[in-house]
Image (cartoon, rainbow, N blue to C red; front, side, top):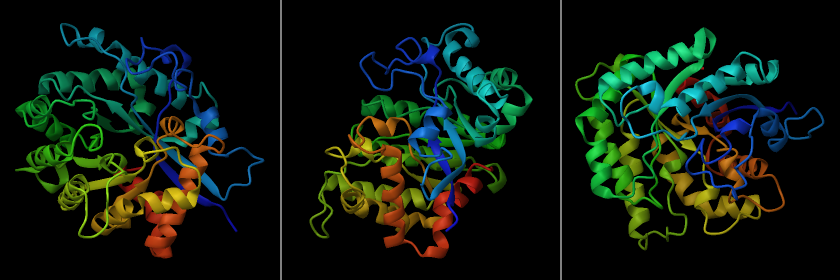
Length: 351
């Protein structure tokens, strides 16, 4: 049987120089992530070596920004956002072959950080700086931007930012330039209100905008639900019920997609087998597929973050891919599964 070709819509990479707290404020020295992670490591984790027996062939990846450390916004943008600019230079080095021709070919899409919490003028300046730092070929592969919202745990602070005039205006600017926006919220650790509030902001961003210039939204990790909640019909935990409501509302938005990714970090305990993980998260995946449909759901591994709460013995990447495979076999017609594995990411990210 020919291997299934997939697009991994959500991976992270960083060089040794950024593998510390100076490069990432969230990266403490004792973390397993505090070392270089590049595509040669990814090939090993996903069993993409020539001798591998996996029935999955990664045909392309989408790089997603890694929340690089930046200073308090003041003065020269290129100075206070020096680390995010270094991230641009790093992905450029991959595209231009520093790590080999295979790495350059595989990196088909790039999602970079953007100062969405700043003024529209600052965002426009940032886009210009990124284009200059990226160079022609890398700039062609920049498909969207992200500003992580999940770490904002104060509801009023979150609301002030997301429903402020700058945020919606900046989303409209991204749409005008043909870029997507990756939505990173966390219903589990942040609060059920995070996806509820961001939904309002997404509506505002599409108001009064032509279909051609509406920004495309790509929601990360199913909104990071709390997989401990009771999902039994008639006994649903309030947070699960609110998550379902948010998913239904978000699915009504035009030009909006969902990533089937990031589950390991939200599980109550380390995963042990494909069958167990699939059974545990099935109610959430079923709801996402019910409302978004396979045509708007895409596979993502969240590598190497999937290693943090992944299985102790097996490869987290492989376990996640096999879990998605089992879930799709149970929930999606065979003829539609290709959309989740590759077609949706190709469409959403314009690969």
